[in-house]
Image 1 (tube, rainbow, N blue to C red):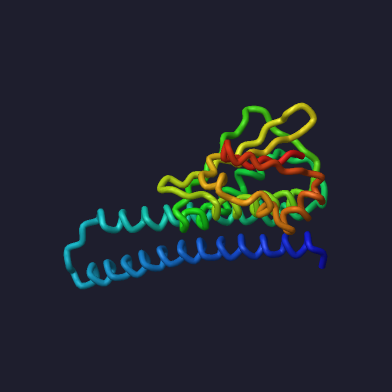
Image 2 (spheres, rainbow, N blue to C red):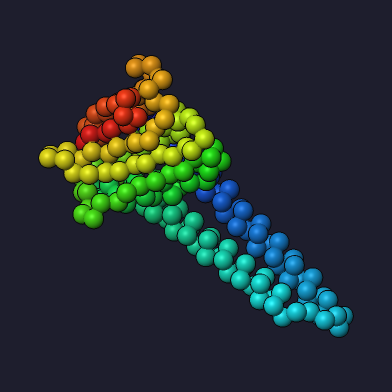
Length: 212
């Protein structure tokens, strides 16, 4: 397996592990409420007075978790289908939103808020969507380890600039303190090469930029 394949496989493993934890959390909450519903039924069978509102509250919690689970599974489905075609046209904004959604749990565990400002017009490129997702994740993973301060926020945007698509990671407080040769590393360089992309680190403006 080549270096790009190894990197992509690690990314796939990171994301599916995170998704599985989210699904397990959903099932745990549903199971907890099912147990509560069972207790209420036993109380009702014994003739104890039960406020009907308690049944409604439990039902609402279960419905909320089912809806949450549906969103998680749809994300997983979109992620899985990103390997359907090695090269195709896609909207960069769609990929950014998907990767941010997949990374939300990991970011929250580190106290980091993820943002994106989607452009009104689509930003279309022709590339390998799965390798592109992998590249965005590795840059995001690096950014999450760089930023410092109480209000940790990473904003990712995409725009069409002349003949290039420009992806900007901004609000990276802590970036000015890194060494110039620290990033990108070999895993990022291999993906940049595969996608015919380059990167620019603007430490003073606290930004990392990818140009395709």
